[in-house]
Length: 168
Image (tube, rainbow, N blue to C red; front, side, top):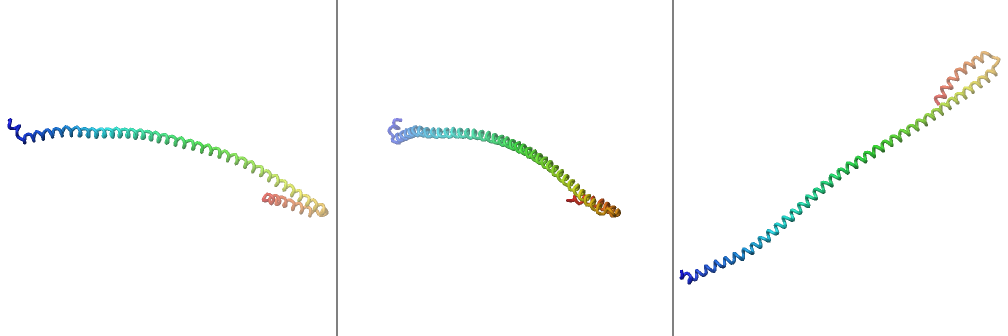
């Protein structure tokens, strides 16, 4: 076994083993540091991703709340505008009814005015016919037959005059 210590191959083997052990020890600490750094980076990215996920979830909740509020506001606005339209329609209908009532009264007054004018015109024509007939009677006083004829003409002229005035 002593001979083994004198053999150079043995010492090369020992030196190689020590070298490998030293490389492994040194490399393992560096590899460990590298892996630990990578693990820290991965953990940080996971935390960052979780934070981003939480922010996205919060943003989603806020968006859903905003959407719900928007829908509620839209429904309220539509309801208010619908009520306003109903009120305006009622007001316009009331105004139209009042306008119709005013026009009916105006037409009644105009019809009464026209009726009075027609009555006055008929009276005037009857008076004119009566005066003309009376003058004819006085001038033809001698002739009774002519007087009867004038009276018959008077009776036929009065309805004709009345009907022609009602057309006007």
